[in-house]
Image (cartoon, rainbow, N blue to C red; front, top):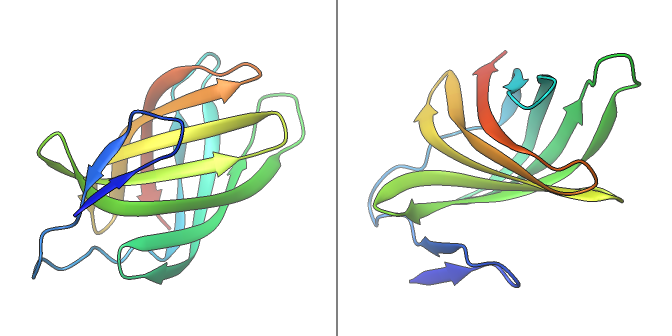
Length: 127
């Protein structure tokens, strides 16, 4: 089975049948290594099979923290198991492709689209 995101060239193949899907419900904290580095917290509040949803909060230096909803899906992209997350705010959309899917660690890359969007690595730890 194939999944595609409208308006983007992201192709996500379905999760391998019979393979357990990682449980990512909970709080994850870390940094999005853009300029300047951006501390972030991802709280996954719901997981239904391969689909997840929750909240992402960013804590920019010398500015108030901001939060927005995040949705995502597990799948296979370029031969690797991934979790794709999308956080859509009023002035930007941030996409995260997490390729390290460990019980206490998620890591990969993020790309911002819109106001001030930048690409950079992301590393999160379960709290």
